[in-house]
Image 1 (spheres, helix red, strand yellow):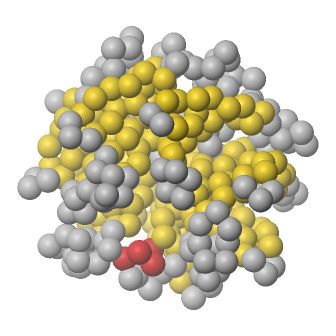
Image 2: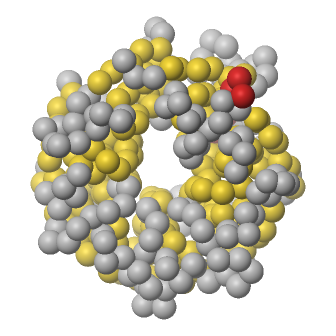
Image 3: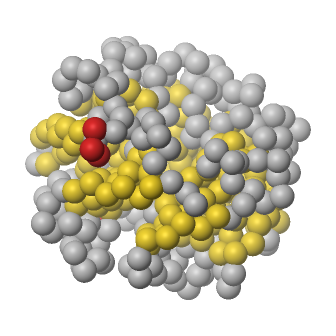
Length: 348
């Protein structure tokens, strides 16, 4: 993740086989940090992390423990754990944390319960409160983890959008605006059933489209749902990298942050364990097969982060993290000299 408290630092969070939260952090050099499990019997889902603005120097990382509770690891002057007791339902999906800067500096955690409902825990005045958003009436229970966006760009009134996949194999959106209240929208697509957790981007208007949401279909193709204030919502088939098809959950990143010619890059895995990229430039999609590092088979979904040009001495503007079948953290990174692989080893 990009750290606003220190832009030259990078933090990658993961849950180890020991049930602890581990951090791979780049300061003067890369190092591992064991954050433990917050007093739980072990962490099982997550993590999801945010870095708050410089005027609020804090990192927040949320995970789910084996009992269905939410554990938050927070960095202010020092690291500390907070336990967020679950609502009167069993939580089962990876939580997603979101910063809401125009709403009294609130933080929200979105998570899905075992009955397929969407729940939100809102931090107000240092107290966490649960709110039930249920599920889309026309979509059925939710089966994927959420992808949450905060919307506050020019020409787009403040609001929230949370995207999920439902058992009807459709993309669903829960949204909220103070002027309109909350509601569900079914982004039904009749070509291929949705088969992945969504990945969502918000591009500040007047950039168009304002929102881009990516899912992988059961047919192994990547699909984009995009929105702007003029034409509304539109589906686009991005296709696949060829044979084999892509699968799992995609990871989308806004390349404009780093001044790249590409607008968007979406990373995914193939069934052979390779990392592939769909890159959008001048309204045209192109696929790149990044392979894997030293013939190791990649087994976890990728996580991509873009950085402003000049953040790192070697000119790195993009980092993509994955885990291979041996449990080793692998990184595909883009310095000024061109793409490379780096193996971070295992937590120790």
